[in-house]
Image 1: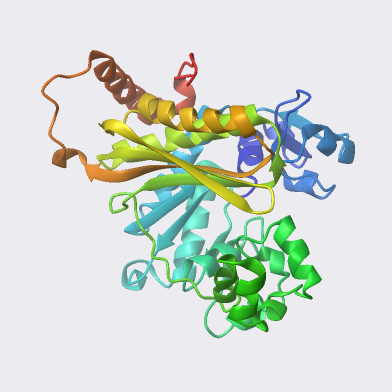
Image 2: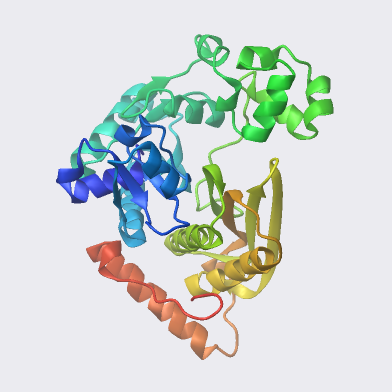
Length: 380
């Protein structure tokens, strides 16, 4: 989706259209969650301190978009995508992969499917999306960002090198500022420069990530599109363009991710026995923290309690500015495969009923129609 949060703000308040819009808070430690394309012309971008963005673009309008409204629109986008392909893998509130292999007889060639999806999103939701069409996930994601906003880019075996090789190396997954600096020292500035280096040399300089860069420079990615109903884990993560130094902001992003993952579990009748979080910071250092739940669950409150506990334990001891935050529900099983316990926990049953009731209300009236309260250490 194009500038998703800002686009929703403009949809709800048409007077903002065509103006420099920043979404996020206005406090001293607030960060930009999305910058409209008008604001980006001044150098504003997501995860930038709001104070910095306002210095770059003093006339920008700052608005806050409720999380419930964002999740409502995300759900509606996903509902459209699921009508076009049997395999849909959401990866964030505003991004998903579709495998349209074999769909040409029913819906046309992939580029035509992409155009029809874009038109449905625009006509039904009033938003624009950029779509990349390619023969693997890496190239499809890359293509989706080449002609924003409202773009449609096709990468096929005939043009992959023409598109890929001239690109700056920072367009590749996993090449952040620290890695980019190291690559520049080695004379690597384009994907073509990276491809010229052997896998052995890349591994010497970048460790395990060297093989990853070697594959991407050749346009290789063999990961399948895995829908929620078949996945062994369900997760969501967000990479910020800049490190975020506000621990509460990162925590709030994590909460939204947990709510989104929990709803996906319930929609596909899956239960999770474990929860893990992923945090990236510093010089591309990544840590994971995981825990096993007492019983398999799809209850939002229980998943959030586990995720928040993992995050708080890390943040209270050693918080540093964060580049990526993510959560995953793991060791999944079908609801029907789980035998109910002999004794039901009354509090858990109340939470289950709350989730069911909220899902029904949100399905009928939209996310903004009901809010989840927060209290306690885990703010459940």
